[in-house]
Every structure is written in structure tokens, then in C-alpha cells.
Amino acid sequence: MATTTIVGDVVAQIGGDLIDLSVLLPVGTDPHSFTPTPQDVAKLSDADLIFANGAGLESFLTPLIESAGAAERVVYLSDPLELLKSSAADEHDSTLGDPHTWTDPKNVMVWVQTIADELSRLDPAGAEKFQANAVTYTLELQALDDWIRQQVAQIPEARRQIVTDHLLFGYYVAAYGFKQVGAVVPGYSTLSEPSAQELAALEDAIKSLNVPAIFVGNTVNPSLSERVAGDTGMKLVYVYTGSLSDPGGEAATYLDYMRYNTRAFVEALAPTP
Ligand SMILES: [Zn+2]
Image (tube, rainbow, N blue to C red):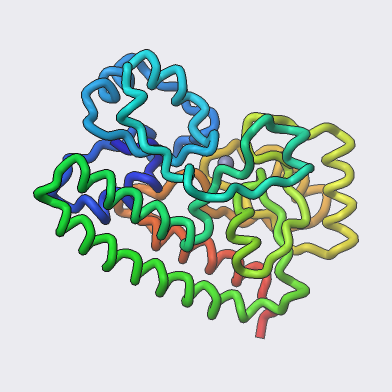
């Protein structure tokens, strides 16, 4: 099993047809606020391995894993990574750091090796295939990273300023030379609420820096972001955040998700020729 659709896609790339994979969170679900059903607990009890993002993203998971008696079968993919921390987010979350590690493909390369190793441990007969899939997919992640760099180069450095619904592109921002000007919810989770003062400060920052767009995720209620956009004259640009799109959609895989979001950033921030 995998928790989110993003974790699920990466696990599928490595496991291929040697594994029987189910993904816990439906498409479009916010991982921060997901509430599992008794059927979900039953599914977790039956799983041989459970891959989770970890780093506090899936706050529903700890009690669920306990009641399913599944603690030894859970692999937290972000455990080996050093998490970003910001003092602004600390005021809102009691988290370990920024859990959205997948927004930098270099972090997903670490996930891939963990997935290949864990699947090989479970099924030694498939080890050669899992490791070969990991090599192939890592090359695709490297190509994705190169492509993002080329795309982002179209945005002059001074314009690489982003405002998002919550702080979820931290690793992307750090990897590709952006600056996070602010977030409607200035925390790593969608669960907290901004104060009136924080919203006013955000609107002031947006106006003084002349930021053109707010990037809003597919898994949150956009009403607060709409209000900030209305007050400041910014454009609302929809991106994919905690979930991939439907299987037939424009961000159905992790690679497509990253390409979709990068195109959205470039389109909103690059000067028009
Ligand atoms: Zn998030």
C-alpha cells in the first residue's frame, strides 16, 4: 500500500507488475486532513508493506497504524532526508519540518532507493527487477530536474517570487532559486488558520513586491486565497499540491505533476515576450 497518490506513483514505477499496489488516499484528497474509514484500517492490516511520505504529512497515520498493528510494516520515505524548517511555519505547526519533500526530484531519488531496497527485502526474487527499475526511473528524475532548470531559466531571478496557499513548495523553492514571499496559511499544514494580522502583512508584502499570482492547490478550499487575490489584484493560478490528477488527467504521474506545476510557474512569472 501507499498513502498518497504521489507516493503511490513512485512505488508503482519501481514495483511494476511484480507488486499488487493500492493507494489509500483518493485523488484530490488533502493528506493533512484525511480521515480514514474502518475499511482503510482493514486494508492496512492486510498489507505486506506500507509506504508513507512521513515527516508528519499523514497525521492520520499514527493511530491508524497502531490499531492495524502495522508499525513494523510502515516505511516512511522522508526519514532519511534532512527536513527544511522555517520559524514562520513553527508558529503554526508543531511539525518536524517541511513534510513536502517530493517537490525536489533529488529527494524522490532517495525515496526510489528506499523503495527498491524494501521491495527487494520483501521479495528477493524480484530484487534484480526492482533495482533495474530504480536505475531507469532515477534517470527520468535526473532528466526532470534538468528540464525544470531550463524552464525556470525563463523567469528572471528577481521575478522568482511565489505565494502559495500553504508552505508546500519549500524544497522546490530552494532547489530552483525561488523566494517564498508568503503563504495564505503560513504553515506546513493546511489545517491551521492565518490571523487577521498575518493576512494583512501578506497582502502588504504582495503589493510592495508586485507579485503577480497566488498558486493554489487542488486539495484545499480556495476561499481564503480568493479573498487575498481579490484584495491585491493578483491572479489565482491552480496547481497540483497534495495529490496527482485523475489517471487520465494532466498530472497523472509524479513526473507530469512536476512538469505541470513548473509550466504554471513559468507562465505566471516569466515576462511575456
Ligand atoms: Zn501540504
